[in-house]
Image 1: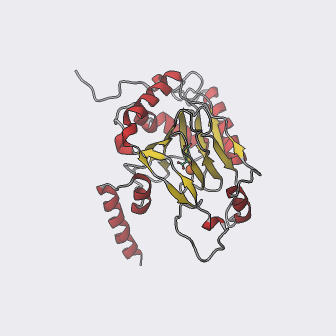
Image 2: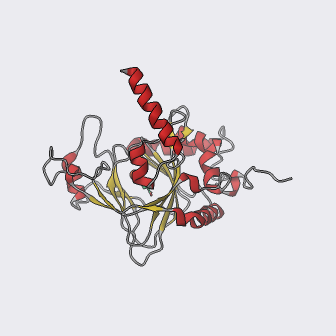
Image 3: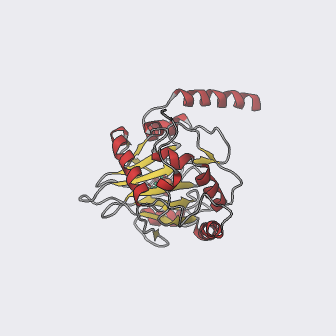
Length: 291
Ligand SMILES: O=C(O)CCC(=O)C(=O)O
Ligand SMILES: [Fe+2]
């Protein structure tokens, strides 16, 4: 009999000895959750080392390599807020008018085998429950966007993902292939906050100042949970002679059924799907009702 179920069990990918996701009542589970919670409270970033074990990393990287030809690369000059146009309300040297290179690419959500290792980690109820516990959120759902929900961020030699803020409250990432040189995740914790834009400090960072910059020493297999709304961050340039950097990015939402906006989808993936058009129509309709 053939089965459509995954040929892997979670333990084939994740180190369940170190992180017993299958035993959420165990002391080891709660020790990991509490460590992550503390890190998230301190500076909005938690790193769970060796979450995906060596064989798991190999399986993820194999799937990424097999779909790499579907990467949508962008070479854009953007400000930290993902805008591309000069804003006359601000001076020329203001962060709003500082446009830096983003030259990386994303493998989109519809490239992945529904039963392959990328989807298996993304959709595992045990992983979702663990991430929600770390974030102190009652429940999470896979981001329903068919392109942006499950992606891999690809940086080829010479590429970088410049300083920016995320639009979503948090991101969940597994580093799958480290660059030999460069390609480091760097962030400035809480450079902005509620009612505080932090433009002065942001401007200095965009100019190359390193004040307050933290650099993560991530290894393949590490899980990172990052609150990117308030912390400016970048992936630094991968050196010319290096291996490419591959990261798996899992997006979750607190509400079910969320689909991304058309404009951002086109920007990141170069296309939209019928689901994006449908969602946009539904938004227009509900806006009309609300008015
Ligand atoms: O590749 C990464 O580690 C994160 C990239 C990033 O900041 C993003 O996709 O918003
Ligand atoms: Fe980001």
